[in-house]
Image 1 (tube, rainbow, N blue to C red):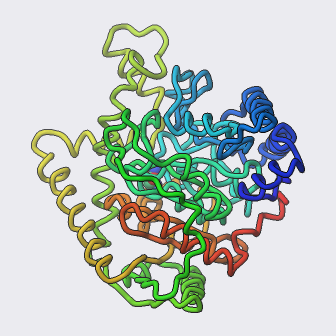
Image 2 (cartoon, rainbow, N blue to C red):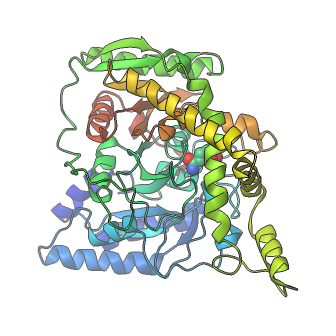
Length: 484
Ligand code: GLN
């Protein structure tokens, strides 16, 4: 049962091959017996899961079958969940029980999904390896000595190890696509504004977007059908019609124009990863796609631009974690200043502190123009590169990350190299575009992801392109032996 995709589980539930309660029990048992090896969950919610599963079975018996009726899912611990701890991977929020649900959670609840628990993540979604979590690192199910990627590493590892059929993630600079690549699964980051950010704890508000980690593109389409759409409670969510994302999965790719940015295949990319990506792109030629080289000339500005904008926004967003309004409070404060200083000092980990310091500096009087305003200008240049490229091509392809999963501890003392692991994903967030990573092969038994980048609100096309690859290859259906 645990090797089935969401699409297959929907068929099985409908046919009465198993109930949602049986399915949910299977996953809860797997989490219980296998997750000690991975640390992919911060909180497991068996009572809620079984109660939701019973409810789903009852609804089905009554002929009232919602889109995801009875399907178990895991939620990244960045989404507020009523009456369940929402820690965002931080000691700061370890005691936080949200009084309300994020819109995404509400939508899953109202379409019959079952919540298995909340997944581990880098602290406040800052990281590329899941090593910044206060709850300890997550292991990669393909190689337990390796990282799963980050910041949605708990979700990615849980899906790859079949501890859940699929999970949510969030992506500010690559946090869905990079862990999907490292764990050999399918990750979708929708267009900025496609999915509501209400109740999703903010890291960098102009970049954050919720999306999916699943085994297949078809499952991502099923989840996006539920997640996408305008939310009056999020002023940046966009009023665009939501198509049925499963309807166009099988469209022909004849004549599809694919662009390969030369900047994504240059120095810094591991040779064996490059080879996997080149072979994957060739699959599309067989489908009648036309491939050409393109240029995104300002690509080298993406990482420095992001590391001004994201810290600036996070320094502002995290100011509410002060021990008064939100978050950990120190013991016996002497006065108000002492309370702020010690509460924040104790609650935040080193990576979060580093970002707050950089952001506060970049926004301070006298430096604002030189850093923040300048970064907004280079952001526009990066965005314009994509605009120009999409006049000639329908989709951009390249690697999701420059290497396969690195080992735990390998880059912890080298933040700059760590930051570079998002070199191919960050520009997509700066431009607000949709992107995916799909399993494309292996190097030394560690997965490699092919990145697909589309035009704004072109998720249906991306999913079609990804699904077509998955009809012709079986990389996405392979699982790590240890968790078979
Ligand atoms: N790895 C990037 C960072 O550390 C991106 C994180 C994300 O997308 N949330 O900021």
